[in-house]
Image: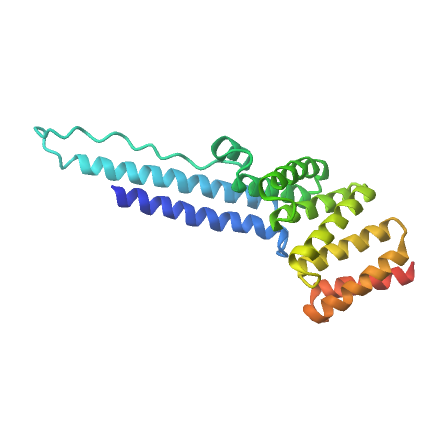
Length: 241
C-alpha cells in the first residue's frame, strides 16, 4: 500500500511538472497555444489525481479481503488522496499566495491572458506577481525580473509607454548586473526598451539602443538567429521613420 501511494504520487508529480512545463513554453519562444489547450492540460492534471485516488483505494480494498473474519486487525480506513487544484486560482488555498509554485502559476496564467490580448487582466495579475515575488525572492531574482519584463510589455500593449519605459529600464539595469550585458534575456529587454522609445517617437534613442543590441546579438546568438533578425529589422525601421 505504501508503494502504491508513493508510486502514484510520484506519477502525479512527474506528469504535473510536464504539464506545467508546457504552460511555461507559452512565453519561451514556442508557438502560442489556445485557451482550450491550456484547459485540456488542467483537465489532464485532474484525471491524474482521480486515477491515483481510485487506484490506491482499490489496492486497500484488495488487501482487506485477505484479513480473516476473526482477525484482530481492524479494516483499513479509506485513503484520502487530495486532488490537484483544477485551476491556478486554487493554488493559494493549498500552498499560500506567496509560495513560489503559486506565483509561477499566476505568472503563467497572466501570460495566457497576454496571448489572448486580455491585457487589463494580465496587468492586474502581473502587478500582484511582481509585488509578491519582489517580497519573497527579491527584486533581482530572475523570476521577479521575468514577471517585471512581462508587466512592462503589458504596459506597452495598453499604450502606457512611460510606465513601460520606467519598468524596462529597471529590468535592463538589474539583468545587466545579475546576468551580464550579453545574456539573451538582457538583450531581449534592451530590444523591448528600444521599441518603447520608438513608440514614443524617440527614434535617435531607439536607433542607438538597437545598434547595441544588434551588435551583441550577432556576436552571441549569430546573425541569422530570429531575435537578431528582428532587432535588425526594427533598427532599419527607425531609418525609414
